Amino acid sequence: MEEYLPVTPPESDETKKVTSDYIIEPSADKLLMELIPKILRTQLYKTLSDSIASEHGARMISMTKATDNATEILRDLRLKYNNARQSSITNELIEIVSGANALNN
Image (cartoon, rainbow, N blue to C red; front, side, top):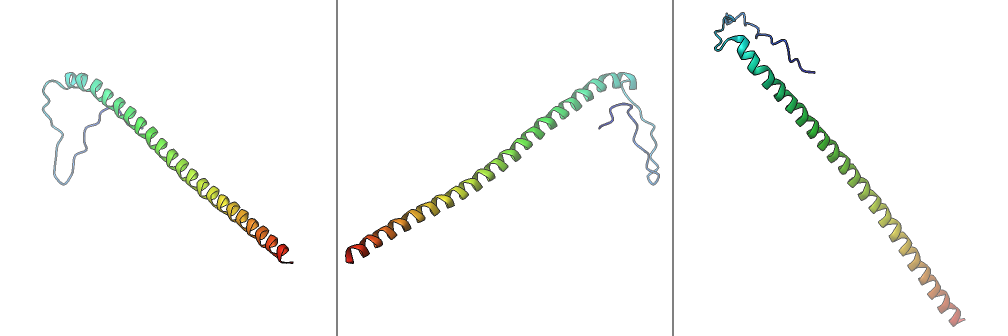
């Protein structure tokens, strides 16, 4: 939450003995009437920009997590595939050896 109105003058620093006696040209009322709409537009633009940046950040995080999950699933599937392939090769070797033993007997 950001304060928009009322506009408060800066606090004076006791060590520097700064006073808040300013000369404002054009008048303070005219200046505020010019600045208040510009400040409001700027704050609205900043809010929209922050919202868009936040949405893009959330999407980036989501896509990173999805990529990490897909990589992990791919690794698991590769392991399962290699295990199945190794089991198939082992079964074929067992069949070949069994057939060779049967021919020898």
